[in-house]
Length: 119
Image 1 (cartoon, rainbow, N blue to C red):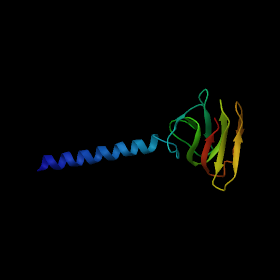
Image 2: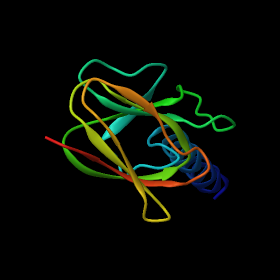
Image 3: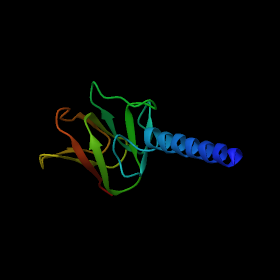
Image 4: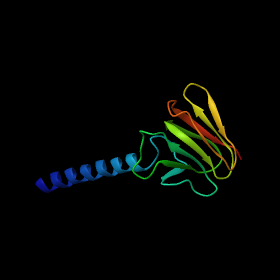
């Protein structure tokens, strides 16, 4: 009986640790997938950089994968279009466009709810 209890406890601990790892490193404080955290914006990518006071252990840049709409849920201070233009959507229904091959400041006090990469 003790062996079964130890195995069950070990399995529960392992599952909890795996879930925490995925939750902390798998997606931005807010994205529905379709990207990755980095210390820089990759070539050919649309990227948003966390606003001052916000951080991620893998780096401040969320590199967005692919065209179309991507759900986001955090505060960002800059946008970088190393390729296609993209629109940044805010919680208050406003938006900003980052034109292709440019960068610009974003509203760091307004929560970003999504990004649409224009392709």
